[in-house]
Image (cartoon, rainbow, N blue to C red; front, side, top):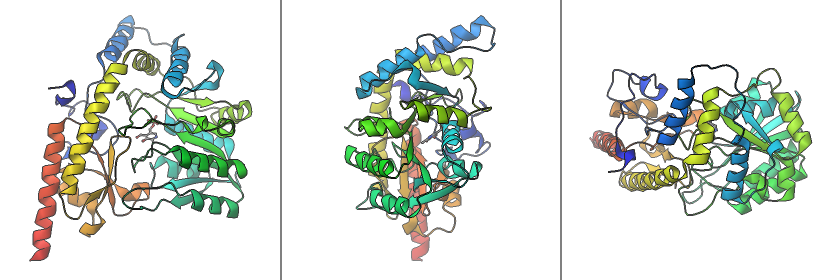
Length: 386
Ligand SMILES: Cc1ncc(COP(=O)(O)O)c(C=O)c1O
């Protein structure tokens, strides 16, 4: 039995994920955090800092930027300088900062959908227009709509910023070098900056490596803001903490301007957990990936056996994108909740007919969720057949 098999009670711990269904038997498989305990090294580092007992304004730990630089080199063979790293309280804050700093009031933002919903709200938060380019499923997978994006940018020349999600939540894609080169080429031609949200980059489940958009070419480095964080991989969302890497000094300055008055230092615990995660927890991450791969395969197999639901291949992230349109449900969210499983509703990502399922939980929980879904769908088919 692995540590990831342990069921830890989260009810009563102010968990947003579990509180949504307080007092019910519904299994929460919606928001993107994991039902796994974080590595002991992180708990120890936080405990040691908490024991100090003074929580004034902290600076970042001296070695933190260096540890990030080494990580970029180790994982992506990417050379980053210390001064190119900016800390952020969170990636969503960074998306908003980019919209505010890089896009003028009469200019617009572009993104491919379905996508993590703050991509849809960030431009609107700052009164910027958003062009949505729908991805179309092709033979069960979701190629990035490079050509449609090119056509849109050619028509709407006021577009200044692409919000790119890679790995791509909720569709689980890990974009390949060809797609990324195409995206960079079009953005460069149209003078569009790229804000590349790569928060899931260390959760690759396929036998491939993540490619940061900025590493595709020199031109890519010049036009790209890369945003990463340890919070998804090491289950630290409640502590927050992220960073941006921006090579181009002009772009960096504009981005900084976008956060003026709003983006300040991180919390003490965000700095401490980020350092411990990146410096001390690589073996834990490897074990996590093995566990998530097995969960993904189990889930894919079970869904394959349920008529009326299909699952896109999950190349990265711990989020499965389920096509439930064949079930013809009036209210898919309500249907799955009645079945005892709380999923994320597709339309919030601009994905009508889809539901997102978070499988970062002990296998036993996942088995129970699959049993419940299977049984509810089978009852539905028998009642439709009557
Ligand atoms: C693609 C993506 N970006 C950002 C976030 C949240 O980032 P943060 O908590 O750092 O704001 C999530 C959380 O699920 C996500 O999936």
